[in-house]
Length: 95
Image 1 (cartoon, helix red, strand yellow):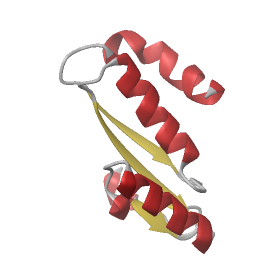
Image 2 (image 1 turned 60 degrees about the horizontal axis):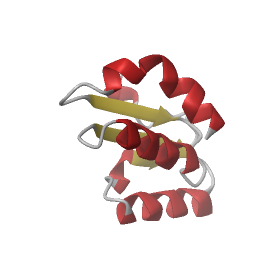
Image 3 (image 1 turned 30 degrees about the horizontal axis):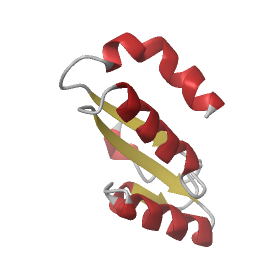
Image 4 (image 1 turned 90 degrees about the vertical axis):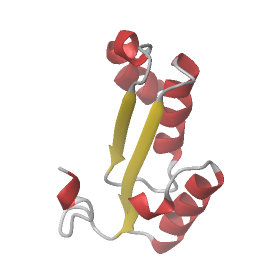
């Protein structure tokens, strides 16, 4: 939560505007804790905000847990790619 607070705090005023959309990327997302915490934090500031989360994970178990968790929370599990984000960026087209 501390990291999320540090990352989101400078943008708090903009996040309170109606219709705000934010994209969050974690290139080593593990089980998705940072992605979920960011989604929760932004929506606490603005329940009408849209948060799209993206990530990539090298460990197959962590990758599967992350995708499952995001699916349960209503996010798109296809946004979590499997593999090494340094040598094979699964989101290269999103830049």
